[in-house]
Structure formats: C-alpha cells, structure tokens
Image 1: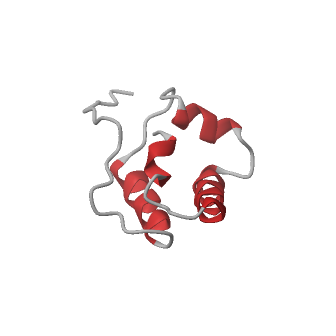
Image 2: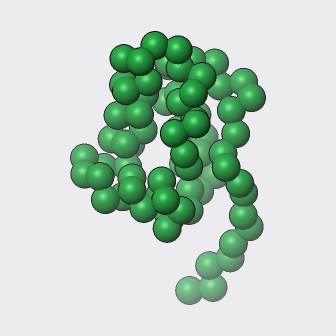
Image 3: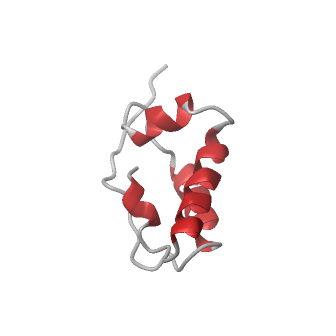
Length: 76
C-alpha cells in the first residue's frame, strides 16, 4: 500500500484527509498503518475493499490498484 492510492485526489487538503481516513481505519496510532504501508502486514481482500470505499468519498477509484497481489495460506 503506497501513497499513490491517493494520487487521484486532486486537492492537497483532500489528500491529507483521505490519507488520515485510511490511517484511522487501522487504528488511532501509526503502528498498524506503518506495518501495512511498508508491507510488513498484508491487506486482506476485505481490507482492500474497505480502503477503496474510503477513497471513493474523495475521488473516483477507477483505475486505482494496489501495488501487488499475493496468494498466501494460513496453516496455523
């Protein structure tokens, strides 16, 4: 997940608001957001949908994609 997700948001104030909404989706602190932002944690398909829904309040989400996709299994 990178800041290019908010590149479709035109106004600087709106970009900051969009970024803050995505951060607050994970928690009030920066720790969880940081781990997702830097790829330490992976976003589930549901989380990706939720983030796209948040961004849709600020801009069109047509053509916006996440950096890459992985298939992973949890054997635990």
